[in-house]
Image 1 (cartoon, helix red, strand yellow):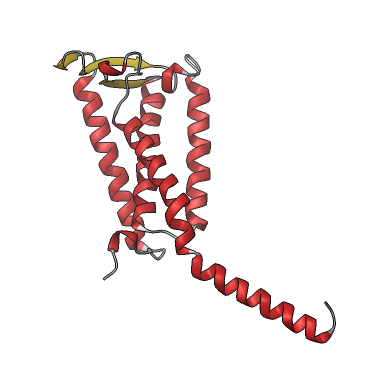
Image 2 (image 1 turned 135 degrees about the horizontal axis):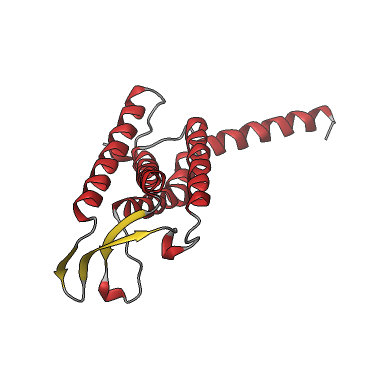
Length: 185
């Protein structure tokens, strides 16, 4: 029996509903946690893990600090390009859709903060890592989604297309044999 997690999805309503459900779930959890932790610090495990409210006007590690408008434009461009790619990409599996949804949900979560507040609300602090930046749920989803998509494209995608590649190779070989027999090659 095949593992359903790696089954291909056809384009259509099931695929769209799956992605929308995950994106809205990510946005709900992200926005809720940002609201609950905004402006307060909660010690969870001193020296290891704490909730610390930070307003970040830049990207990761405060890259492009005070240039929020550039990050907003880049996020919009990225989302448009990513959605267009997804529209034309037909080898969707559940793993791909999870990675896609995590990236889109995380990007939209931080974009909402940048658009309406002018900064991103970060609150998760991993103190045991030293100067590691404070981050939020959207950041975690973005990172996890990118990792999942990398695993998909590096390891699973070539296996999904193995049959197609063999079929194309056989077609090209038969075409070359015909040309050879005609004396054209």
